[in-house]
Structures are given as structure tokens and as C-alpha cells.
Amino acid sequence: MPNNKKPPVHTVPNKAGGWDNKQGGKTISHHRTKARAEDQGRQEAKKDKTEHRIHKRNGQIGQSNSYGNDPYPPKG
Image (cartoon, rainbow, N blue to C red; front, top):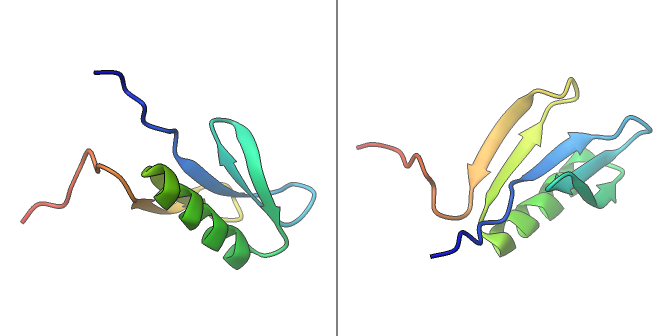
């Protein structure tokens, strides 16, 4: 069975200002605010049934949400 899983969506700060959503190394959207970028990134991740990773201003991942088959579901 082929693996058609899409790469995660990353919401990341843009060096020139604002925030970008990237998937598979390509910018899929640009936004003035982090909140708008998060909303759009969440929609893309849900549509593609993949992960949404929200980065902090310093580039570190601050939050990660799964909208597909989570390889590490919570226990209990």
C-alpha cells in the first residue's frame, strides 16, 4: 500500500516580517499575523490529514497538533 501521507504544515516566522505556512519546504501562504497564519495552517493540516507544527519567533516548535493518523496517540 503506497504511503500518500502529506508532509506536516509548519507555521514559521518570516525573516522579512509576518508569518508563513510551509509544507514540504515550500511556502503555501504568508500572513501579517501569527494568529492568521495559525488559522490557515490548521485548515491546511486538517484538509491534508497531517501534522501542524507551530513555531515560536525563535524558530523552536512551540506546539504540534495531529489531524490525521497520529503515530503516537496518547496512552490511557
